[in-house]
Image 1: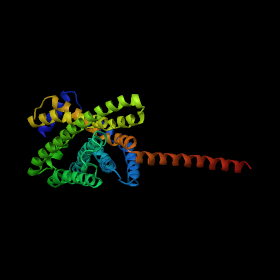
Image 2: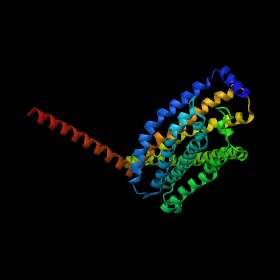
Image 3: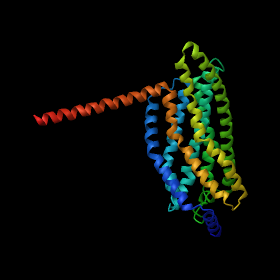
Image 4: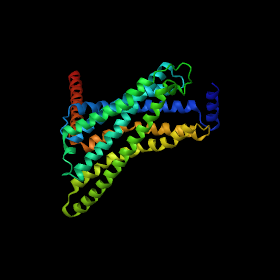
Length: 334
């Protein structure tokens, strides 16, 4: 209790109100949930009705699954952030909801890397490694990624977060629920997530450096042979890079100094300030569930066509409804 009051006093002296921070983060996740759920249910419905005929479509379908999984964790994360959250809800969030949130995030990062590699081979080296163009290989690779993250990260964390949290403070409940092995595995999981991100980040950057060179060459050719359509198609590929930079880079950059201050356990004003920045950056990472549909729409022709078909059907139903109302009004006037 003394440590808790000292931390609260330290945060207060630094000008950071812990209750205001928690409430603000809760509101942000609650606001993000409705549009994210609407978008991802629609995207999931469309993807179910599309056949995976290309490697790109295989990775997109898995990305849709990861986005939907992350979206479903938002209500619990938002409710658990509230200052008056019950201990049972906090325990459930620590053991399950937060774990699935990070599972979805890690899978989204991996799939972004696989999509970037797929675009690299299709645009820069269309006649390159034959195995990378095989549909079966892409399915095995995506499924293996899920098994790796679940087996190495998700399941061990759930199994080792099994302690009684009743004597712990509100802020430290997640760490208090971990066994001795769980505390050690927590450090391994953090390192695992960092390695995944920075390896994928390097892969994505290298892929888009090569793609940029190809786009520049295509732009020069388009001046002479009027190949504008092909050049625009290549430019759309940079949406993947844009989403990756906006959603994931800020969080993983902030995570480095935040983790260092956690290890040092300094009671300075830097730590609570870094926590606020880290929480905002984590929420920004969560917004990928609303930005990823842009990738599906602009880079997947089959998805775009199905989406436009649905939009056209809505217009038909609307016009049918208006005509029906007009007929009813004309009948009553007679």
